[in-house]
Length: 372
Image 1 (spheres, rainbow, N blue to C red):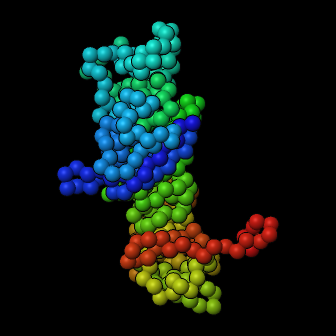
Image 2 (cartoon, rainbow, N blue to C red; image 1 turned 135 degrees about the horizontal axis):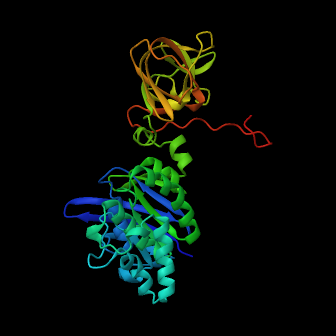
Image 3 (cartoon, rainbow, N blue to C red; image 1 turned 180 degrees about the vertical axis):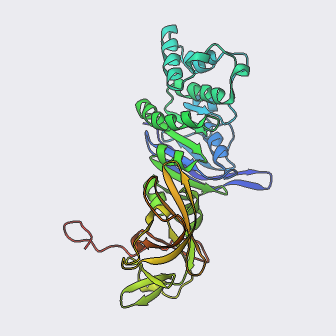
């Protein structure tokens, strides 16, 4: 069983703290994605797990064993580096085969292992080429193939699809989870692409400034972002964020858009009068008929078709911008006056000062387990 535990990790370079008291548990055969902007500390954390660099404070445990005195080559870790780190004097085949040769596998097992992973990553036609003859995308896939070929119990993948073209990147998002699941490895995967994080991770750890700001399943991160910044990072088009002050009436807690009440049924009176930010995912806002109860009058300012969806920009009566997203081919107004519908149950509410999510009150459950 291969688990990974990071306990109170601190890493400094001169006066800069790159990892700040970071703790993390990764379960056996789990795929954990480290997601965050450049400079968040993701790559440093991978190198620290691999044993390339040492922590200034804290401990790394692999399979329950403290790695403090264990050199990198004895940690049972496979890693695909962001900068490829291929052996320039070896062919792609030899690079991929190196972990199998280190395990003293037979010539037949080496050839079968290399051919299998090379076919999957679509580099079987360049196996006899040296790195200098490969494109960046081919180099990156060769480095990934080398990490996979040895079937290590712990895999560290540092943005391995960054230089891959869009079509292959999409295909790999589908194929990689199957391959990793078949290998049964525990995986820590770094990416700055939120779609990749959503597709590949059993859980996602969102990093910023050397700390983990939120960790959860892709659904939890998307549907319950811990703060406004995380809400912005996940979604295309980006989440709508509107300054609001919740009010109370006989109909419950509500905010107003174009002087129309939008009820927030899951929130209590503690948010009334508080400076907040309303978060609306573009796909949860829809055009509607003017006669629909709660219809909000807007002006359609622009519309952009984006292959599988159409994005519209509308303005409220106060000139506030709201993005709507609907499936391509779905009819909708392209300009002028229109009306939109907003489901208050799908809205986020953030504290304006701290940016933190205000969690709705828990639903009262009936004995059958359904919301009462």
